[in-house]
Image (cartoon, rainbow, N blue to C red; front, top):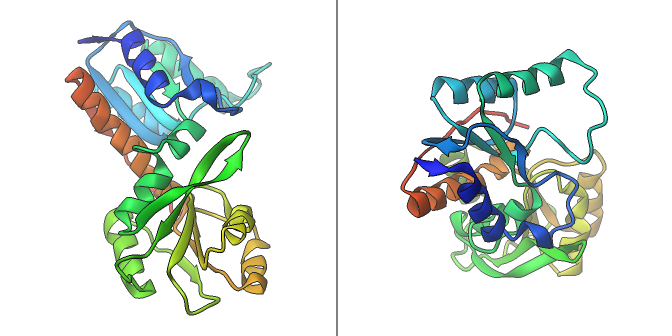
Length: 251
């Protein structure tokens, strides 16, 4: 059994959340019981995620996309009410880590995607309020697009959408989540390929005109790896049981 505050203190420091200017209320969002025997981890908080956490007898839920984004001044719909009420009914804790889990250079989504896809990590890029959150990588193993699709399917259950706009596949920029518009940042770094989760309608045309390959692997699937790795860190640090709750989402 571990104290909740010890877990939150450890994660806050490990991910250095105070160095990020993020509107997603990183850290503990809802306080519950003090003692923690089991941790539930997931990409996004939802009623389904909450109910599965309850079924698994978890004491704290840790997610990438939390319940609160910035200040909440009212609870005026039944969905939000139920999402909050059930947490209190079961005396659970809820914590969320957004940009700090994208940009972490050890277990973050973007560094982890680079490594898991078989690329060589070069450096961080794409400045967001003073913090670089994306990764620049080199395709040292000469992986082709066919190979990449297999890797994404096998490791991330992703069916990627690939827009091929040049014959190169060597210098890659990766930014997980909904970062389609940030293809501009990859272009500034002379990338020939950009990998992200989801996009806006105009991004494929922009990539085509710029001659850069762009690959969409799904927002959810591009952001599973960081929270899974955080769970393994917590297992080792606190000798505590953790469970990643997978709620598949192709978007």
